[in-house]
Image 1 (tube, helix red, strand yellow):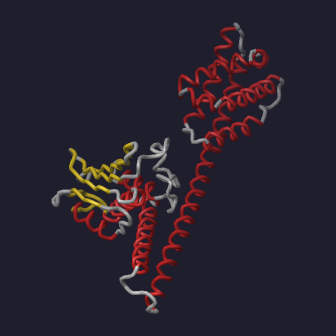
Image 2 (tube, helix red, strand yellow):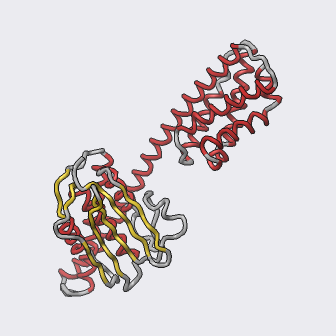
Image 3 (tube, one colour):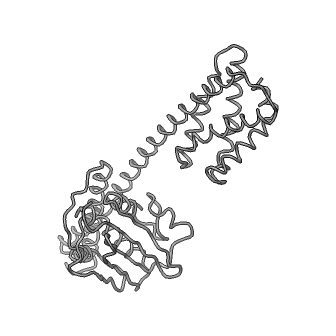
Length: 352
């Protein structure tokens, strides 16, 4: 009986479910889930029909639910949406039964609940499996990108060093500068790999008091500024923060290196550090001309580049975000259209 009523009023059930989903998770997520709702509803009805005929529930509900869970994860949806997908269908079916004064047998509700339970379990399992596979693929891609860039940096440094060793160029030549620049880049990549390995392994930060000005000065001194006209530091010598030295060096190196990389020729980079209540705020401001539209929301995602200069693996800001989280802090970017942007790293000044 219930299956027949739902089939007759299929569009009404879907309209109710979509409206309810939009109220719960927003219209955008609800729109993305329209195809899932119709597929799930059809399989739930098939399960009810089979149960009403005395047969076992239709096995396709688990297959369809698993596909929906996989798609939800692929689209970056929150895992809670899976339960919402099934929940709004059940609510819509119940509302339809009230609207049509349909008398529903308790066995039909039980059959519907069993199908929903099986579907949710299958969808959650598929979602988690897809998430794990996606993380493994991203990790492999990251390692491949960094390995390629590290090989290029070491290859260029080795070629330049050979030319110096053969006395074809001097130690004060542009080739010598190239060797220094690429060795510095290799060191940054290696340190970033070590830092990311620790972060992925969820190793607790080894906190110690650090003098920020000394740390920043050491990082700035190790970098090649290229065409940047000025790289200035504004931080009180006595400013101290409790942090993991290796992780913080990796985060600040990536921020400052990024600023140098994307700043226009003859532009300036500013590094500032200041206390702010219980936190220390470190700002790195560049003159990149501003961020491309839509980049600010995704810039801490792996392989999202800040500007037109596509050199590099695009992983530095991802590491910065992980370092911030490991220190129970935060990082954000403030876009200055037509001028540049400011990256703000905020971490507690003392241990928790």
